[in-house]
Length: 210
Image 1 (cartoon, rainbow, N blue to C red):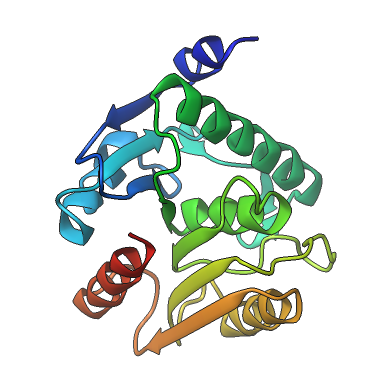
Image 2: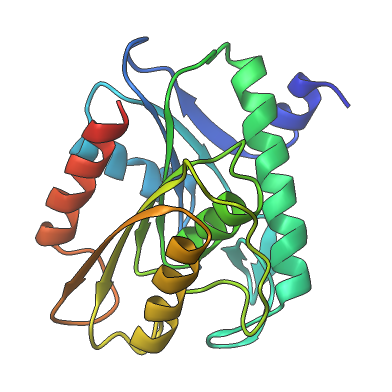
């Protein structure tokens, strides 16, 4: 399958942005879509390009990135498969849209943060910059991450988030660092969501990637 076939066969939005600005890979949460999450890009860098695919798993009619058995109970085999698919899409999109060596930063929320983390932890040659909003460790009790030297991750979480428990968040940060990633962890009061504080931190993380 050609790069064009791969990209055109996956519902997504693309806006080129300025050629000297990064490209933001915006990844939506459960029940959202590529249109809604792409609006976040303007708040982070109005000059950036935007690549915003749609999750291809359906759960009770809602779009997701991978299957799960229940809240916080991920189908890890499916996570591995879907992360590989997303890495393939990103690689094809780079070619199809002529992105060259432009920095690419994944900005994901909730389920989108989890697939961004999984993709970076498995395919760091494709995705090495992640801003994870309300994300958690994506591999349950399994150790799947490869060597992550050169990877930079910013995690942003609420301390009282029942959907991304703090124990899982702490395990995520520990594994990332043990594998060689550079991690900036930010915790705030509150639960699941994106605060103004989160946006300010994410904006700074995107600026460093450019």
